[in-house]
Image (cartoon, rainbow, N blue to C red):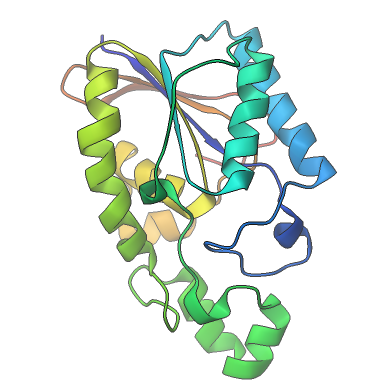
Length: 211
């Protein structure tokens, strides 16, 4: 048995609440988002997990979620690496727009394609495949080697950067990953084999619709 990898999607942000495309913009967590992060952190504390290192994006909603989680597990001073490779998918020209306004401008079908296709990016932005193209190498070079050395690693990031990781870990097809929504603030605990395959997966909390 190798190490443990824990993935947590940030709690609800102010722009999630307002139904805005967020991407690389940098809104704060809502009160609900803070509570979601606290609940996720408590679930990790209750499970007795302690971490050797943490990774997050350069966006504060993920960093604040990580800070809250680490406070709950009693590891506020844990070494943390921040990298834009773990940032949310860049929505380009959609960033900051209300999703209903975007549908009015480009049409419901086109916006749906941008949101839910695997490899069609919005104007000036990234597709899920593009997001994976920066997440996967970073995972392989920076995160996975630590897990394979037996460390317990925490990653607090975003819906789409984590979907790219889950796609690899759970061996999901392009069609399967498009149907997967990750619940906010709910930790996913992966224990990996020495060959980097998944030995077990546990979702901590009943709020999740993750598979």
